Length: 333
Length: 262
Ligand SMILES: Nc1ncnc2c1ncn2[C@@H]1O[C@H](COP(=O)(O)OP(=O)(O)OP(=O)(O)O)[C@@H](O)[C@H]1O
Ligand SMILES: [Mg+2]
Image (tube, rainbow over all chains, first blue to last red; front, side, top):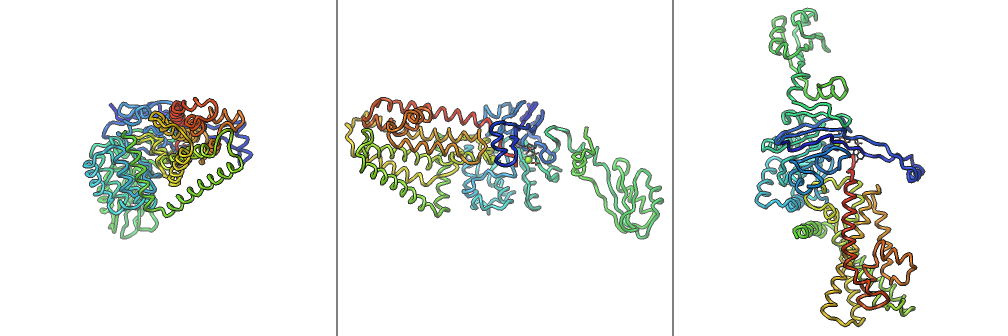
């Protein structure tokens, strides 16, 4: 049985249509008019225990709203959600023990309490025994380096410190399912690396993770499954590597030769590849399909023609693929 | 029981940080003591001119002032976060409350400590005590027990009204609890004997938002003053009714919660 299951999940927000200023507000009192905003539109999703799912989509696509629906924060307009077979509103307390939620934009730490105290309060709310808590904290500390921030009061934390503390807070109770909504937003590179390592460690322990991020580097090497949402609808749900194999198969070989070579010569020697001149007369870009030719073959062929000074191979990341999906240039099937 | 223990744990954490980080702690306490003193001076000045209000002496009205101050004090010292509910709803701060295994209303109300509540409580007890010392009641164990029950009920009613009126914020979109605050002001009227008010106001304070059960009816019963004293005996029932109603309103409201876009 899937641990997270959503069927026909829909959320419509009603926004009051107010005219500008006071006049608009008063008019609204008498003639209430609303526009409906469908934030999540008939989403079907089922996640098996232990899966790591990337949930991506452009701004305003409905990612955070989905996470709120899946954690029982919002009541769906239509459709329903089951967490481990339980109803998130009806069985709120039981579900709360099984899920962990992190909204990168917002902290759950108490602003007036030191981090250590916020975490201890959460420990008591979840009823985690002290020994387990100590063990968990020691482990979090290894990767997240919490030590220095424990005595700091919530409101005085820097963004990176806050995020590390919030990650610990979302996982104090060892939840089976974790929703991470933009958990690396605003972090510097070193902290990002540390946080990503932390994600891998919880995944490897068997925690089910749903990760939302605009930084697709968070996803590569972490999630096997990719779900793309756009305008509230799921437009792709499938294997991440398969997408890369299918849509990110182009490689670009940049070469620099000792002396200029006519483009035609290069083109005829590399049929099936596209060769273009670059900014200087001795630089060329060779585009090829990695299933039709290997980078090694391309380099060997070119080296037989002329003396190579330098070369580099670029491979498109999942980011390029997804950018093309967002722009409508690419439709994943 | 676990719920209560956890509640005190939450408040305790905030209280410790308050002592540690807030310099204005003492100022707040002094300010509210001063406010209560002003109240009493006003009352004394009033009774210097008029010896009794509809049969109510200075001491009995002092007890009513005390009951209101005590209930209000408990509300701010232990449940001040309720007054932040409108703000919490508006900012989407209930998101995390909703995914924790603890009642949402209690997470909201424990978010803050109103230190001024401390002086309200102390002054409230002093006012009730002084009042009691100056009226003659034939104390029996039964009466003492009943008095305690009435007092607890009175506090429960005030807390329930606070919760219910603040929960109205789930329907209004304002980030400030204007409605709850207006109702709180209305509640101040309950410091005077209900009998001095016109009938419409009597109905409002007695039945719609039963502020009169915080002070007037229980004190009237205890002191055997005024007509229809037996109504005071209903106070515990009214308290139970208010508590249930507030919980229902809060639950309904929670279903309307829409979080906030970032
Ligand atoms: N509380 C709310 N009230 C009204 N509209 C909302 C609310 N929350 C979200 N929306 C709207 O619903 C749509 C989806 O928002 P959501 O926050 O789920 O997007 P998202 O995919 O998380 O975007 P982002 O990448 O910018 O975080 C947006 O158009 C947003 O304006
Ligand atoms: Mg979002």
